[in-house]
Structures are given as structure tokens and as C-alpha cells.
Figure (cartoon, one colour):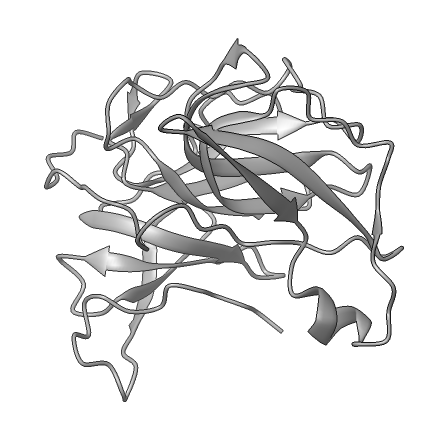
Length: 231
């Protein structure tokens, strides 16, 4: 369907930030992130102390080697059952391999060439949220206008190999900070949205709007929900 949305810009937070995920064994993983001539070390695990408990010893996973690492920043990651990691962010390459916006790493930390969604060059093509469906498809939320050359206003679904899922189509204008998938396949997506009256929308599995949710304490109801966690 044809779309004409507003141009989206900016990151949801100042500087490089990331959502982190825990491994059940208590191991954590780190990559080297290079930006503007300096190196940052990022730990890829989420809320380890609340999940594992403050007494849990954290051990660096020596089997995870990210090589020269990332040029840019990660904003969100999602862990697959086989140990592979889908990552979203604002970056140009990983370990010397050109890839923008989203990539998948093997369980050993190497770029997985079988997952390579394509984003146009430019500052406004970042992925802020990643969500996995049980069938292997991946939802990507951000401030992009297209994926793989197809229109996608800030929210897209791709297959397990990164191809655009043409069966998902929405008409929300704005940019998305976060996304989650419910057991029934509905998609919860939040961000700065211009035509919903709410910063959080619920979409059915095809992308059609099922509902808009208004938070009682939102100062700006169209710009809320920068993190979505479904129980």
C-alpha cells in the first residue's frame, strides 16, 4: 500500500544505549563498539541482577568472540533459542562487514550472513526495538522509511533470512522505540506516533490497527512507551 509519512529522526536516548539480555547460565557477552574514534565495551545481557539475583556470579563467555566489533551502537537485542542474537541499532558495519540497522550474530559472536535486511544509508535509519515471533519472523521498530527497498514507516516484519514480509502492512505515522509480540500474534508497538492519539498501538498479525492505548500518566500521550514487556 502507498504511504506518505513524516520523516523521522533522532535516537530515543542520548548517546549509545542498549537493551541487554541475560543467558540462563549466568554468562554474559561483550562486543567492542567503535564510535567517533573511541572504543566502548558493551555487555549484551538484560537486567542480570533482577533476573539472576545479586548473588549470581557473572562469568565472561570466552566462547563469544565479536572480532573487531561494531561501528556504531546497539539499542536492542533478542536471543534466539539456538543462541543466535538478533541486534538492532545505529551502525554501519560489524567486524568489518558492512551491514546497517539490524544484523544477526551466531552463538559464537560472528555476523550471520543469512540474515541481512537492507536499510538505506543515512542518519535516520536506526532500529530501536527487536521482537521475535515463534515462527522465526522478526519485527523491527525504528525511524526508517523502508526496508529492502519496500516502504516501511518505522515498523517492519522480516523473515528469518531478512526478506521483507509483505503480509505485514500498517498505516501508523511516526517512529517506533519498542515492539513486542503477544501469544496470539498481536503486535504491541510504542514510540512517537502522529496519527493515533496514543504512543502505544496494538496491531493484529497483518499490521491492521486493533487498538490504541493511552497511559494515564503520559505528559504527551503521543510519545510514550519506550519499553514494552508482556507478561
